[in-house]
Length: 350
Image (tube, rainbow, N blue to C red; front, side, top):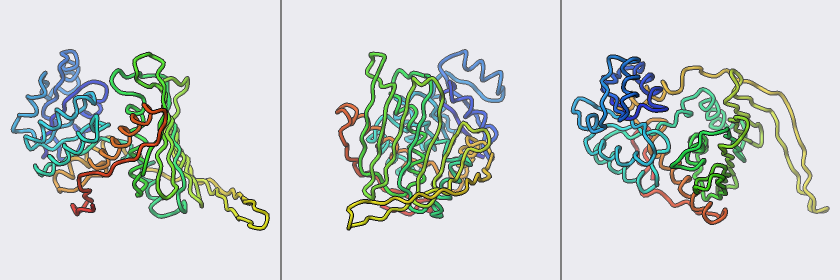
């Protein structure tokens, strides 16, 4: 049994408590939140869980094995570093930290303490994303050429991070999980309409040396809510619509071929359209899958799907996007990681 403490019982905290309460081999012992009204709500819903005001009551509790951090991004690094220093296993809400440097420091500390460090990129545990990864890994799309994502809605305006840091981590985690190639550079543009230097509309392009390209459209000011992703291969293409109640993933037997005619100096394009296939998806709640993965990986000393290395990659792209926005969309080269990448068998890859 893994004893868990959760720091933060705000927007996402109740979902985490509910799913870790239901997870296998897990006991949610304590929840921390500085607001008395939130602790009162916790006591009504989960009377068996102890509520405390101070996060240190969880971090320094010798009976707690693992800590989940569901607080604003600016506090992630400080809380996670204290918890890891105490030898606790740590799960952090997305995005992992405010900078790549902070993420690398946490990864190195986790390795020194032989502790599990994981990031809650919940979408990786959905049936839709698992199916898309399977299709890409099996090369059923052929060679994938692009990923195009739109994640827009009206609100919720954040006071500490821009729209890319708020919305793009979901789709960047999917990108880094599905595409094995490491990105080369990014370009990003954005604008603020609230005079606080926090962009509420932004566009991000992630470039790859192979010619694969990924594009992200994020907005807090759309009159409609859209959660849509396209993955295009030279054999088949995927439409992923997370707002669809049942048919979230559609596979289009659609593609194109081209012939470069040197004699007439023109490129001829042939288009092909075929059937649309709607695969059956796993319907288990993604957050419960994430919680079970965290607990199992602690017990079995394995790397989770949503590893700290994937979390670092997401932060590195977001950090580079800030730099690009400041310079009106200038290309920013992504730096290589200074920490080794470890696979699920704990083998060092780089």
